[in-house]
Length: 218
Ligand code: FE
Image (cartoon, rainbow, N blue to C red; front, side, top):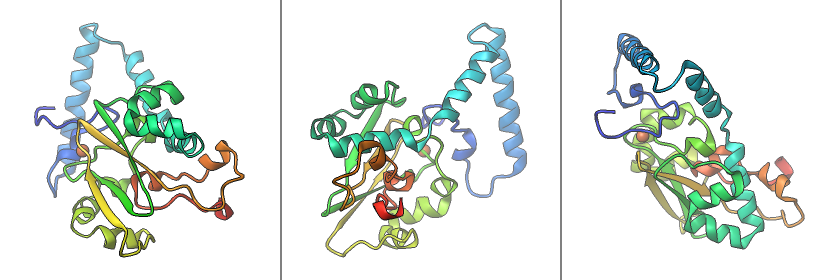
């Protein structure tokens, strides 16, 4: 995109970059432009309409279950945790056999001392390859502005009250840098299998606005 800030293409439209108060006519104009560009590229033989359909299908198949598998494996396998934190792309390739889809993916470990929260203040950059499409609130102006200005207030609204001695670190995603939060493993989960642990890992816990679920609530 011409503003030099763009997503990895996973359904991230130019509408996300529009200022407050944009109108439906603008959306329609972007859709017409997008359709025209696609028609041109197909005519030029760069890809087929079927390629486009297959790519959209692939994007739509991505869900937070992929991220949950990464987290659960990290919880049970310290070696994998180390690789995930040091080289997230490599760890994604190793476990999920997919490409992380962005130049840089960084996994941030939440601990009893430090809690990470992810936002994209500019638009809606998000690790779509491993979490699927972001929730509507993640793209909303309220979250984008307040996550930086008042992170504890925002977390409180999500039902997460952190003790005052926990450091809250808000990280701002960009087109080139995406973040995934590795939530803390809940207490009382020692006997759970890896697939049972993955069930506890919610989308919101990987954005950092929630903890992983307690097993009794799973
Ligand atoms: Fe963005």
